[in-house]
Length: 489
Image (cartoon, rainbow, N blue to C red):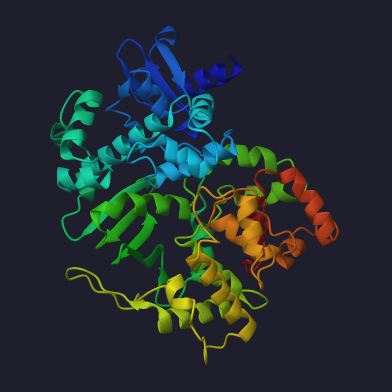
């Protein structure tokens, strides 16, 4: 009851802090809205609250065409959910239920399908299939509104098996075919009229873009990544096809603008979801602030960096190589070494159409390429070269996997079992590649230096202090690193 009272106050105040955290089903109209919907607020007796858009849809409500629930910041996958649900949401975002096989998803998560359905119902108010359906529908609706992609391409990008299924889904949900919704769209200025395609990525405010961009700028691998002014750019490869993505602040507040060059339509959804994780757009900032704000030392850093984010990784293997290179050397030196590896062993960038790149020229090498690499005359000491080869071989034989289904503790144990990998590297990779919000490289010298308030602390004292920061220790680490003249990692 208390939760509903909070939601009611937020709805009446149209409080943007709650956008995407719950949805309002209006019984008199049969639609569901965001709490910030500009329409006249319905009477309290005519509404129902739902923890997710999927729950509202499963209850029979259709999305509001005015406030557009598909444009809300993503439901925070870490907010009040079990670890299994959190991992399941990440797998669904990666397309794990495109074929509708809940049993296979449950197997990957190590639970029964019945238990998985029970967990989703308890935490999200909807079944895994309903979550996947709503995700596909919302993504397709945004492409209809924001691009000029043909409907057949949108159907494929959103994971519908056929144009017929795509059309049926929209008729059942919106009561009209998708082409009519496009004619009613308001965002045609983002239409993709060339080989490039641009979509908006909503984020949960506050969002510290400058701090996040500075983190990526200091670690941008030459030839693979580049930060210029307010834009992050990098090369990608999906199913053998090369592409380039660019991310920058959008002209509309509350959004980033993602431009994709030469991205295959079938990889569009995957790339957009990856961008959301890399830039941590759905972080539950309110919950993070409530926990970390109890610590005196962190409270002042939260005031300075209220929108702190944990930067993700486009590729887990690439990040692990980068972390190995960063052992006992500066961030700048590790970045230089990573650029040399990319230049020697990475594929030359090849793009479709007329799009040309000057400074972005390489795809970061795969595990297959580095498993037998000699790394001679690059400046890498022999022990680290051997560690990289061991990691590459572990990836190839399946002993090391960066899948969202991986349990963080088991992943760290598997990574540390490789000679040359310690706890710092394992925690750092889990923090960024697995998006584990509680990962914490406790022995990091930068963290120890930053937390010297009022007195210096030992590694053991830092470990004890960090117990109070659970389950958001990764965000605490980023706050502490951000407070230093040069961040660590």
